[in-house]
Structure formats: C-alpha cells, structure tokens
Image 1 (cartoon, rainbow, N blue to C red):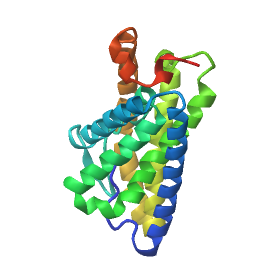
Image 2 (image 1 turned 120 degrees about the vertical axis):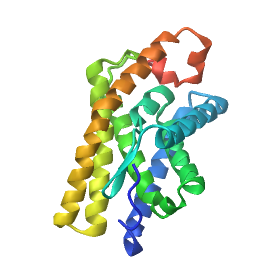
Image 3 (image 1 turned 180 degrees about the vertical axis):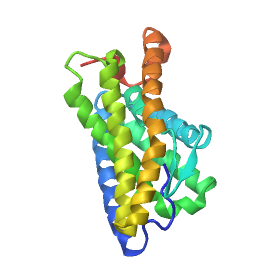
Length: 225
C-alpha cells in the first residue's frame, strides 16, 4: 500500500502529520505496555523481525499499482498476533521508511500519509482483539472466525484510509470515485489471501509452541494472562 505522490499535498499534509503523530502516540503507549511484561532485548528482536518482514512484504511479495495506490500483501494481522502490536507498528513504520530511503525516495513525501494508513488499522485490530478474544485464550488458539474478523478489520481499515486520503486530497468527484473503486476491487485479492496467511502463521506457531523458537515471539501469542 503506497498512495501515489501528489494525492495529498500542500497545506493538506498538515492533517497527515497530525494523524501520524497520533499513531506515534499510540505506538509509544503500546510499547510501554509491552515492555512491562517483556525484556528490551525481546522487544528489540521482535521489532527487527517485523521490520524485515515488512520490507519483504513490500518488496519481495507480488505488488502492483492500481490507480492512486499500490496493492501489497501487508500481513499486518500476522505481524500483530506473532510479534505484538508495538513491534508490529514499529516494524511497519521502519520497513516503510527504509524502503522509501533506499528504494523509492519518491514515496517519502507521502510517508506520514502511508504510515497512518498502515498503523491506525493495526491499533483498531489490537483494540478489537482485547474485546473479541476471551480471557484465558491465547492468540495461538484463535478460531478461524476470530482470525477472519481481525484480518477483515485490518484490510478494510487500509482500504478505508486510502479512500479517505483520495477524497480528502483530490475532492469527491467521478474520477476519485473511480480510483477508489478500482483500488478496492483490486484489494479484494488481498482480503481473500491474507486471512489464509494468518491461519498458516498460527499453525506454524502452534508447531513450535514447546521449542526455544517460541521465545522469539510475543508472550500473548502463547500466554493468555
């Protein structure tokens, strides 16, 4: 997901800065909560894994431009359940930044727009998980229905933010409606595939539950407390 340069520009970028600052505030809050029950080394390692994963998702997995944005397999829900909300958020932000700095500098002016689009749905997923997942249930034991709900919320949130930025930056007219509809239709492929990736990742996590590799993942994945 990369909204094309120029979709939002000029004074309208002030809102993007404000929303990105809000996302950063949420990231700090989630980081403090994570560090209250994990070590700094564990947190740093999970953040590094999320950053590398994000870069791979954006650059290695299939992606294609559709109108005002690009369609990517972001796997945000996968990062969330395996690594935790704060490492996932930092990983998405850092992976996006590294890509912009070294491979796609033309995307850097849209960094705050794009990082908002990635992170706000992630925090919505985190909030839903706290309400959806019963006490005493580890994420590794989520049902297929729960995984589908979390994934749909994240991917739907990404599409909604793309639509918002297009209408906000370019106005509400026939051309922008067409651009949003084209992007939404193309993104339906992601909506179908990413829940399967989430379920596959959880199956893998169950397979390593009793091994040392499990220590590399988020505590909440295995510990419902």
